[in-house]
Length: 256
Image (tube, rainbow, N blue to C red):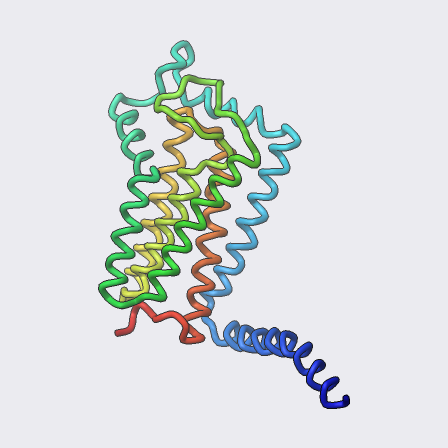
């Protein structure tokens, strides 16, 4: 009887022991990481706070004046169909907004997955796939959850169909470009090259999001929320990748 009781107790304590061991490993990992990991954790917290704050203001109806003011300010006073700036700027905005479209982003992800598969970096391949697929799912789910209509303040300069909040182009551009930028940075030997790649990823995300407001298809708060949500997801995926590399579960892309 006593042996049976001991066996049951051992089984009950096994999940607790596993959680305890995982916590110890995670604590050791954090202690050994450089400042980049701490900055990433801080970035997650700040971006998450920003998203929550924007959402609260949106639900309380406090952001409408700012959204309308900026959208109207990007159009000529007596010609709401015409955006400010030279004619080439409108074409550039349409080209830039395509960089955040699902078709192009899917193609980039598939090319990255193919490369990682050829290099036999299967762990990294699955992480990129999960980051991209998870980001797409979160974007769609949040759009349906909030159900915010598209701006009707100014005419749309490109066709749109889905709900407005958060901006899917902004969110997915942040996720994909930052994930791929971080992946490429792992191969770079020089620090300035790493900084350049991550800065380029941030710049692309900024340009895509800004183009959505310029074209009148998103409120500015849609784009800000999309950037925040995309940054949170991208940084979480990066932190998970670093932790799994530390555990040896996922290959370090910078090593052969």
